[in-house]
Image 1 (cartoon, rainbow, N blue to C red):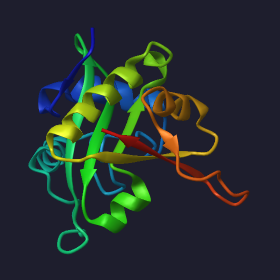
Image 2 (cartoon, one colour; image 1 turned 60 degrees about the horizontal axis):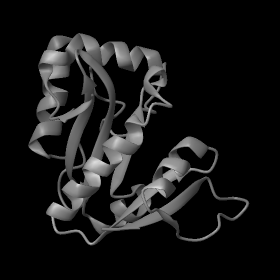
Image 3 (tube, rainbow, N blue to C red; image 1 turned 135 degrees about the vertical axis):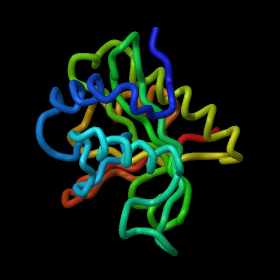
Image 4 (cartoon, one colour; image 1 turned 180 degrees about the vertical axis):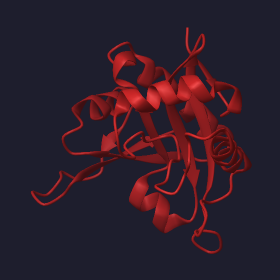
Length: 172
């Protein structure tokens, strides 16, 4: 059975294994990873985890554009299966990226892990006083769209031909 935990440096090697499985790039939504994060070295990984757990913004983003986020890793045993983040403020950032972003490593998909994690984070969002949350996924990401819809996501508008994302609202 999976669990949601706060990011921890104790899972450096298992997190790197998940990261390698995704392949190059920053497509692991839910992990708060930026291009400047050094996750390979122990010191860099420690600094990244410290940023995630402190709720601070990435380097260079502090100030009016900063966001506060709750990051959780989806783990099972000693494996990192994915990540999920609840983002709050500022409003323009949330409206662009959504309140919640999640990603599940390829080998852990199609097992209900994403739906389980999203359900847990919806409970967290409600406990933080939110009455509805926005989730954004790429138009071609049918698995994420199905997960969001299964948990009550209502499509904001039909995507236009030039849209790259779908926007869903879930009432809490």
